[in-house]
Length: 472
Image (cartoon, rainbow, N blue to C red; front, side, top):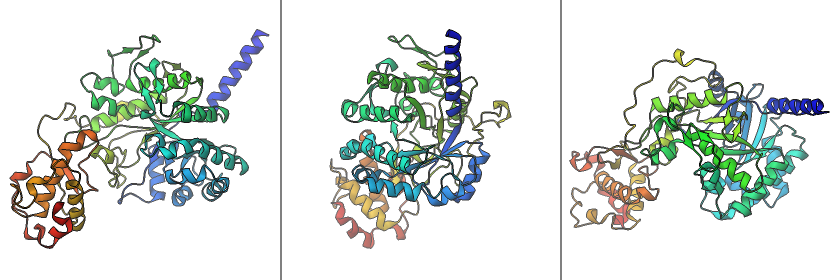
């Protein structure tokens, strides 16, 4: 009888591992105005040897381009539809009928994600509609007999209130009982995944003194962290972050829900003062993640040894219209023209020795010089006047020196005034999340803008001054 039980357990384990394959995929973001076409992009994804692709909508051109390929596909219900779908089964049925049914099964849609990082949004009204919307989408999937499609939602690490040590992992008190518990119940009942966006870059870059770079890059040889409660020993930051979520789920009574890394990656460039955003680190991190996830037998994490972790790397392209800090536009494996930012093989089959040498990093230490936020070249002047007005409208005397009669009022140049306002705004609000971007009109620089030569006549104020309403 004992041998029979052992055989059945072994058989179940083999079925389970067959169902959850250690395939690494890529997130195909589309926030760029210079990206390759969907059909060309799918060909590029194949050359990376990816086995999965995730898109942030249900773009029919992309889904058509994926028809007949062997790529497993994840699509997404837009954030703005969640409130409506949560109370309207007909709308959920229509969305699935329009965006999934015409492509399935020729396009291997396997995951239908409801929204993106919903619990990171400031609008709390949508938080409590997330799980009801997931239930309605799941019901629609069942009604359309889409047996292979799992329903989930990707969450960011900020869903945790505590993450260190990992055994202390705890979901935020404002969502733990009201959102997370019913979500985990749903995922457990439907045998779906907890989709997690996890980026070791961000905790490391915010505390590079106490978190070792090699530990964040999965290349540490003599750096370990031991959890004083669980006794588990960690050799990299990724495992540490993943297990914090594992313990948080366990704390709510769901210790066995499978993790799916919905996003992970490292920026290949960034703003002048963004530490560690370079090609060397990006290639090192992503190659090491692939090596870890594709290892046979599976490595898992200290809290879940030997468990397969499916994953998507972020992202396919450097996307030039993403907002925020410079790193946001530089997570791509590829440049927009389709060329490699660095060599990588998502199958994990190419030995490290076959890749070309990487450029040495030059920004792995905090930037110590001064940085200003100035107007980009060829900025649209009408848009610039509006951005200037916005920066000055944030208060804190941001623009007093460039008001009429102020010490920086002259010379009366829109570009000079805007650069002053952007720098003043950024200096005051950077720690609160303010960025030097202004819809692409501004860029950080180490060059003191007060030393710039006078702008050309085409850039002086004339008729644009009234657009900013004297900056008040």
